[in-house]
Image 1: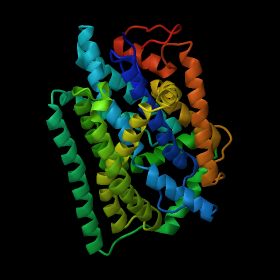
Image 2: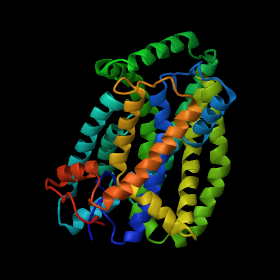
Image 3: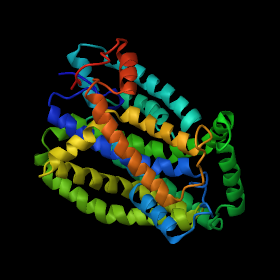
Image 4: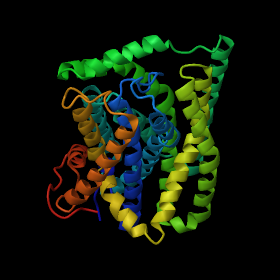
Length: 406
């Protein structure tokens, strides 16, 4: 059996194993959307100040829930699965007696180019370019033993957290620092008006936002994503998904750790981000989150994996797996739909929908993607963007229509 999953990932020999991974990807896709849409719907989000038009109790509650349970958690699941899928791609290349490095390098180049267009045209907070660059490091580290990969991941998490703690101490000794709320609010108001303008205005605004986004990606997301890549590499090497029942105790322990320490860290992160932005406390909270967010993300994954083995497991996998098999298409599609809703490309609703409404739109959009993915894969072996990436990666046109390939 051959085929691809999200981001063009080749199938494992056992369809059930692959379906479980796809379901986890689909779940991660929902979490990514719940975070990304907050930035697409409001130019204030992430600036340290929130839109004064939406300061009600319900608005605040939704912001806290998103920060605690979603922000900085779900990209880690994506990253882990990227690393796991990397091992499947190596196995697929070996079976095909093809050179793996050139094939994977083409895949990364394809992701990078898609990411650049995505960042400039639709959403500056793109993750594909980061994955493409970090993928080169993963390629160089592909021969690491599982235990070594895990140790390297732990060093990355802990080392980055320690760096944030040191930076927080420096800020504290210098007076705590903080943001100029008036200036931040004025910049957000100007960005809101620009995003409601024509296409050129939207693109220019995205380009202006990119330097700040790049700083966040380099100093926060990239180290965490690389660490998760390595954990996925180790899990793939040991074929964790081949026998989940054997890892029952580990999954339970991950749930306990994630829903205690991980959740506590999420509360600290949310409190600092929403009440003390830009100061030493928020920087320290980022360090705390660097350690605790992986625990909470692991608890989410462990919970879903345990549920897939339960009474309603088949229904859960059936619902989420199609969206997970088309992650690249759905990820870019989310940004496209949100851009049409919130910017001058379409309805220009940026800054006009309160946080509860934004969360409801995210839930509805994901529901539509689940249904559409299921419909599409009944008629096509790959999602549209997965087809394109696979064609570029293998330099061969895959079949466009017909039964889904597993």
